[in-house]
Image (cartoon, rainbow, N blue to C red; front, side, top):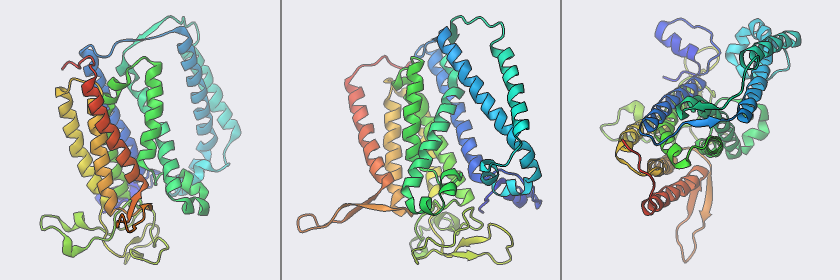
Length: 399
């Protein structure tokens, strides 16, 4: 079954609809970052125990800079909470249905927001600044786990959304606010590229070697991606495959795994405008929002990816114990991820770009999606990385 919000999932279990402003896709994204953070923390601890990662020294200047950033961030967030809280309470029913519309509107209470800001500022000052002596601070890399997660989350979501928007320019032009601020429609490689850049910059600022860090992140990256794909599947966010031909179904495949209609999908799909199936059709007896399903069964590609990624996580998590060159696990991750994404794109519904036209010399017409092009690049990077690491000697990771 598809659950556009967590409230629909609770209703399916209990028969009681509890209005909550939590979309299913968003819930799985938070769960993905939480699980990823847990295993990143475990990897950090292991490398600290083996002496690969050393204690980080944070001088007075960096401490002050960090506290200023913390001060500003907490102040802004507290102001926004105060500004919006009464408006959310008064319009809770609408908030549970379209939280983005409530959050991005200009409606709110400025004076309550200001009060929240003042209280938070005073508390932050006395908790972190008042009578504080800034001496060199020594921290372990594992203590920075959630800092890394925050950096990866913010930069990754921005990158994922930007790539998704550029994949669907028509949607951006039709409804720019929804395209930019909706919680669905995130492109993995956009998040991966942006997240990687900013995490590397943060690691360098803390004198953590990139090769060591990459191996820490590799298993968690593919696990988080798989969990995120479960969010795509269970919310029905439009990230599905081509129409599934029942005649080609392997005998060992259950019907729901081969083809699915995504009933009550969160995007209320009614067709892609091309005039070709699948179309959207109303579910008999359903009233209210989210009453559409697909007219044809399609391949649940997000579910395929989730299953593959969880298996890949188990593989990477276990082989890391037997690899003694920093960076190798990450390179293997790149190869696995690239192969998986290239293959799944064959049966996904997404825009394709012509790479080569057929002619008398080359009789094949080649079309690839944006993700397939990037997948080929990261497979090449992964293979090249393994060759490079095997030629270059690094301090081994002791297990």
